Amino acid sequence: MKIAVLGGAFDPPHIGHYLVARQVVEQMNVDKVWFMVCHQYFPAFPVKNARISSFIERFSMTQLISLPPFVTSDFEYKYNKLSKTVNTLSLLKIHYPQHTFCWVIGSDQLSTFYLWNNWKSIIKNNNIVIFPRDTDFVNLKQRVKQAFQIDTIPLNITVLESSKLIISNISSSHIRKRIRNHLTIQDMVDKKVEKFIVEHKLYLNSK
Image (tube, rainbow, N blue to C red; front, side, top):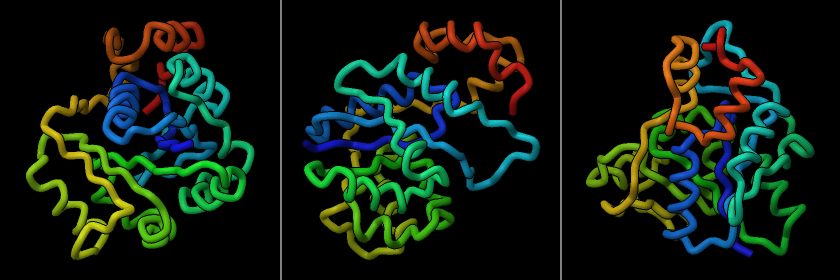
């Protein structure tokens, strides 16, 4: 089975996550997309006093949008609580040798990819899919080369650059900010996720 892995905090999961996952299925012909909910989150530029929601809260919200072929995975919670991507990828191969995995990276992460733990090992030893988070398709491959410090893009790296892709700049941080400012998040998250957020009073004082 061919599985695409979309990792992140999912705090909360939103329509942007869904759009990436849906189009990866269509473009890459994968069997499933695993939403890999991290146990811990280490942003490239940490925000002082920022609070990440509990794993259970984030996992539960992500399950609400995980209709087939999407699956919410607790793999990192079970096997890699430090949530280092390089370790997760190695462990996936050990625990699921019958499957082929590709790791999905949003183009917005390219500028800070050099901060990822053992980032060179990630791009050398794994299948990587780059999904655009903006409309700069013309320069996307060049940006990938610069970020990965390579002259040519190898076969294990796929850059999705079709102008037919639906691109969203919605982010979890935008949603948390809107909630904190008492603004609507309607149509930015699934209705079931919105209900969960309200019932659990999430993000009212978050960053």
